[in-house]
Image (cartoon, rainbow, N blue to C red; front, side):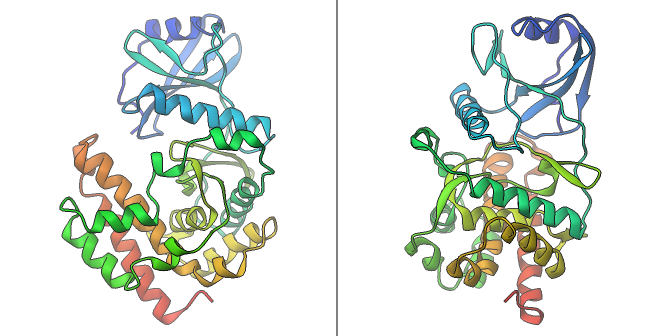
Amino acid sequence: MGDYTKLNKIDAQAIADLYEIGPISDLMPLSLGISNSNYRVEAKGKSYLLKVSNDKGQQELNQEMSLLLYLAELEFPYSLTPYKTINNDVVYQYVEKFGALFPFLDGIPPGPSDIACEEIGRGLASLHSLQHTDKLNMIRDHEVVGFGAKEVFHFTRSSQCPSDFKELFDLMFPHQLTWFQEHNWERGIIHGDLYSDNTLFKNEKLQALLDFEQAGRGEYILDIGISISGTCLEKGRLIPPLITSFLRGYESVRPLPREEKLHLADSIALGLFSISLWRIKRFKEKNLNPLMAESYRELLLRAELFNQTLKVEPLI
């Protein structure tokens, strides 16, 4: 679903000219992304990743690029840094189109395996272990683009909430997420959507974390739950041994504090509800892709199956 906005070679060349990267020799649409159309561009023997925004405003995209530039300043090894145009802009504008240009990195998303889960866990912990500067305060909150415990809870009390979402929420969270909302969790930059398909691997090694569209300042425990919920899977089900591998990689960089360990299972379930709500807002309410309007239920089913698994095989 990476090609909603169609670019022809003339359009792509006009965008490339904003960066003075030379004449384009090849333009290839990529089957990646939801909020962006993605293209591989070849120019003067170099490869680039050209993104065209489908549904984000320029302010939101500028916030995302500012976050990536901040990560580059901190020398975070797993994020791509956007190029700047000849006018020193990190977001280009061409007629009604806008987006960003990145270096192209070879690699593929991994299949389910202990090695992949451990690598992704280690990569996420590296993000959570960054030593931040005062510039962190200039980075957007995750809640601007994503959904944490407070947003999920309030949505269940709104008239827009589907009945299946609310019913499962009340079943799985009889405490109404008070544990999350009342605790002072460790915070910093979180990815917000680190599923395995938002990573690139080469020779079983993590090369990059992709798509920081839902990244911002937030609670690490939320980020861990989201990532496990979309990474430690086989045939759509969360697998405890894969979760163990993820945590082994994560804790090799950042040992989990006691409170995060105690609430790990709930954080994974919350991660599923968070992305389910994102799908409701994006596909059901905004109608970005009518074919995916009911896709939020896939995450609810995953949460329900996870809840059943916990009764047989608790995480801790």
